[in-house]
Image (cartoon, rainbow, N blue to C red):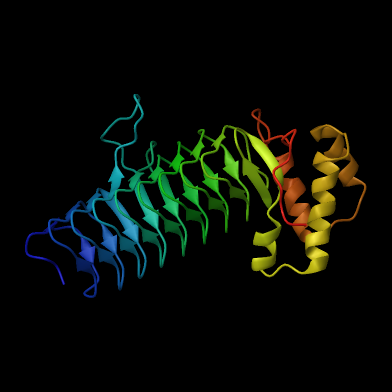
Amino acid sequence: MIHPTAQVHPQAKLHPTVKVGAYAVIDGPAQIGEGCTIEAHAILLGRITMGRENTVGHGAVLGGDPQDFSFNPETESHVQIGDRNRIREHCTIHRGTQSGTATVIGDDCFVMVGCHLAHNVRLGNRVVMANNVLLAGHVTVDDGAFLGGGCVFHQFIRIGRLAIAQGGGAFGKDIPPFTLAARVNGIGGLNVVGLRRAGYSAEQRSEIKRAFALLYLSGLNTSQALAAAESQDWSPEASEFFTFVAAAKKRGICPLLRKAVPFEA
């Protein structure tokens, strides 16, 4: 299952079903699980752990050193990848920048051509990153988020669960769960289509809309909206929305665009 031109480090542990394509390089003590495919010219460096049924596309580079001026190449950090992920051609995924840390990808993610995951990025499950998305260091992307092609994200920000970022956007603030983000640090509405596709009931969607309206449409600032929310009863989904907002750090959350992006009601 290993092409004769591939180079595999003697300390690497590959399940017998792993396929390694022509001129691929596994240079380090990688652990690669059942049913994985490493396509031609892909490069895996250092300590990488990979679950089952993952695909690493042509020319992808996983486990490279962080692009951090203070990084010490002797640092023992790694990349951790779950199950059934598709990492397409020419993606780059860097290892953690501090000893014992990791860049982490969950399960069932689709990372399309040319994406970059910098050091200490964390993807949840079922995250979709379209072509050429760039995630700076320590970005966290929660389950089910969709990042449109060419989006760029500043270090340390968070993208909430089932949020969607329109292609070509640039973001340096947190994107709350269930929202539609656009342009530069803008929120255009709720990801109603995504909520419906994820199986949320009409009642659940209504509660999320009520929470969104309190935060973005009531005329209150963020602190005032959070204080007002504490005096009301909310569904688990709406509570998740406010918990995320309350945890925002000094950069805060993306504000509502003055001219909202249309979304399905």
